[in-house]
Length: 156
Image (tube, rainbow, N blue to C red; front, side, top):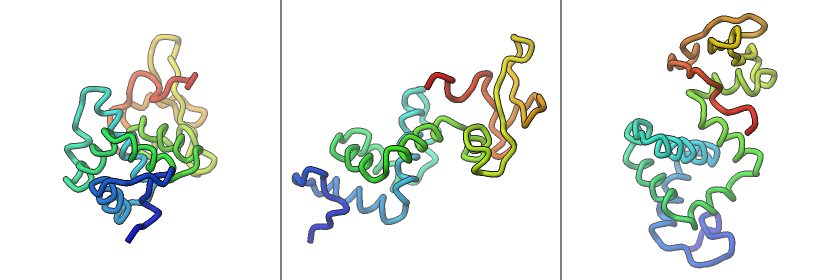
């Protein structure tokens, strides 16, 4: 039985391993989460790290690695959400956690105080909350050490 939710956009044949991985990932994760985790995997691999992928269950690890190497499944995944949601997940994957992402990029929507980055006195990296410079060194939500630069460059 064919399930069109797991078919290729052009109607072409979907190999059984692709269909199986698409079904397994979709059975336990919403499309937004699959896209987010895939972007996080790409970020880790680009930085030569594998901490993130090693912390995932074998079930997700296998599926996300398959998508990374399969253009057909990448196309299927990118078609699972509207472009603005794909872009949000791409940006979110650059941050240490969703709490910090929301405070930096979506403070009005999340009800959080705006967090911003600046070079204090032009030389010291500083993360500020609201209108105060707080010199945050660690994320208030996940405890990760904050970088000495914005998570995403201003021009992207």
